Length: 505
Image (cartoon, rainbow, N blue to C red; front, side, top):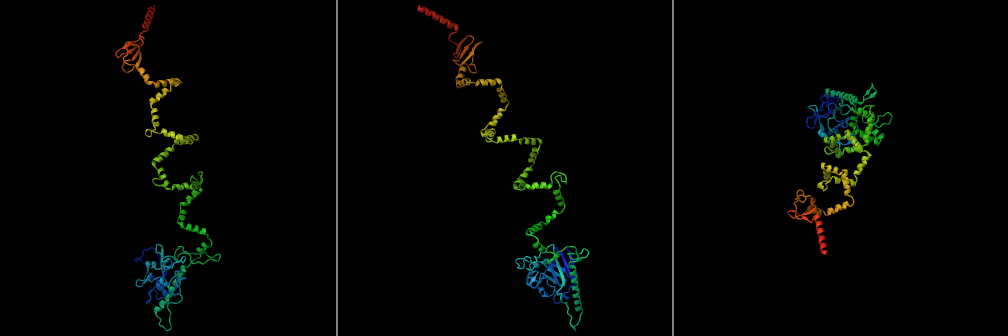
């Protein structure tokens, strides 16, 4: 916070709130400004001076200032008894507590709370005093607020002391008259200092804050009529700017901080790299300009927009988060291996694509579903194929593939043979019974004791004795001869013939 002091004023520029003496009160020491209060009016000096208080250039009138309003130069330019601070108002719209004088301590106390509670200085629709474009806005107190206390002559059109003929001329009257002239001169000096100065070295007028190089605005400029007249902001906007120009200007004003950021290093250098350099990062290396690459991305605006959706960008369940998983990164690394890339290239061949298309046919899908079955689903194709793959069955299949066996199998399947095999199969019980009952043996060195298998002989079992050429039957304890031998049969036949001859005579 800086305190600026001139011949006629003291100014907090800016006021940062560090000098509150009470909750809402700010004190100014006016002892250096040559103000001596009158005995009957503490707000007017013996030499005709009064104080004027300003907050950010807005005059803070007291209600009792009505007593001085007739003095030339007391009111602000354009103000009257019914127009204060540029709006229609009366002295009752302010109060005497907005600021007060303490003559004993030579202080002026400004009460910010009372100012903000007074209709004239808290311009709003509810106060009935505010109108758009009136030239004033609500008063606020912040770290950038400027507060000024200025000593000024109450009436610039006549002297404060009027001498009379034959009156007693006192030292006080002479001092007051002299002070009035002296203070008027000081006001003129200060006014000249605050005027727009001409710089003879550069040949231009300069709108600096007095005593500083801080640039300030020039206001109250009339509408231009000649080619060399100054032009106001309103005239420029309403005369030369189109509606689109105003919209664009407002848009730029709203992003002024962004515009500043763009103009601040290293952004300009980066923009130059973007526009003039290639993807090799210099002005000549690379094959494609960076801006062209950016345009390519811009053409993919819808795809880029998808990256911002919750499905894609969610911190835990989004696709991008899943892609960042360590296992997924490992799988992608495997996919990037040379061999895998080659294999994927093969998968992209026309023939392979056609084959994969055939794999998706309804019948093929159904067949693959059967192949994928298991005992739990009632389909044991996979289990059966695993069984077929065991070493013993593979060996058996190899044996069946032998040319002789293939020929035998072909002979077995010949017409007639298959029928005979079916006949035997249909009478398999009788065949098994015959095999159990009948056998051939040479009875050497002894008769058989089983039916040719593991079963003991049963009464009625037959055996042909190849040594004796006789059919024998097991009677339960031994084999007995059935019928005669060939020699016995011949002899018997001969005997029967002789007997027949004798009988016939």
